[in-house]
Length: 488
Image (cartoon, rainbow, N blue to C red):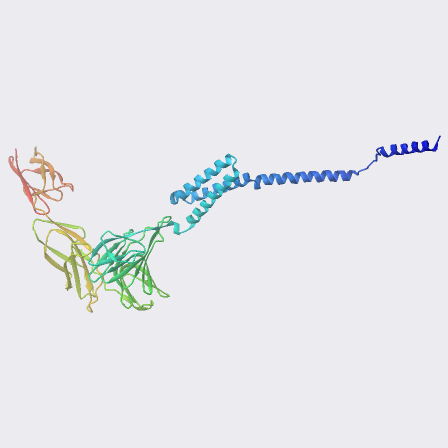
């Protein structure tokens, strides 16, 4: 065989060997397989947990659901705190926004639902902050001018001008009142307390508020140069305060009737007729008892403290007494209890409770009574004070009011037909009817009992078998009406 042919055969065999796939056996340990299987299982578990966490907490749906749930809890808390009653607009707005957030959530608009829930949450948080604030529950009150005499002016809060005070005008926090010489103003508070501002005074209202949760009322009055009488009633709600501030002192009053004067040099005089008052005079605390007087310097230092001259007790005419007369003018005896330290007494009689229309004013009475002879029909108020030998005058007593009525009309008189009855002792007559209440009824001079409403029923013995009887009714004023009836 030629050499060239043999070489071609070898080359072809080499080419065949080069194109043939060679298989090899690879042996992997079981531990390696177990490792990779465990690795992929753990990786799958972590991925599953991360997916669940994302779905539950990080997805827009989860965030929207969590926000809606939180706002619902806040809304329940706000309802418990009274948002529906105290701030219904905030409650209504939050409720509507929350409803829109729920609607968007149910419609799978999670991003929109999240935005609406955030808005409701912010609105509720602001409302809850207000509900937790004391200022939110503080309601502004007002006082009113119940009486005014002379030149009385007011400077309303937030204004610069002074204007004339009118009866019935409402006063609020920040208002100032000043009275000119010979003037007077009476301020009535909504709790029944009363402040009488006398002439040449300047008074500022610093606080008039009420906590609508506890119903506690706070009143604060500031006196500059002033002369006032205060009648403060006991508060109905525990924790209420009535404060009167003067230069160098603050009086805290629960129930009292007192007079306070602040002089031009800013000295203060407290005169307490009844009640108990606690004074904060500078750094010192002073308790003022009934019928005591204390004078304070500008800085609060106590200049003097002592007992007040006692106030006389009123006796006659009694309070709410009603006097009926037929005459145009009647005498009235005024009497009161004596005071051992008094050298004289002052009696004032007026036709109004503020003693603006004074009919009688005498401060030199040395006895505990006097008769006024020229009082006609009308309503009268009277009060008395005592004056010692040094000319110092006590506070006035509480006033008494009485009425004088002129009556010239005979009493109303209805009489039923009398019934004559016979018994062994003689004849008796049964009479019945009605007469004006308060009147007196007599039959032939004998008094017949009458009920409080004027009805009468009575058996009366007759002095003879036949004849007449005479019934006479007389009212409180002395007017009389007679009836003469024949009986058989």
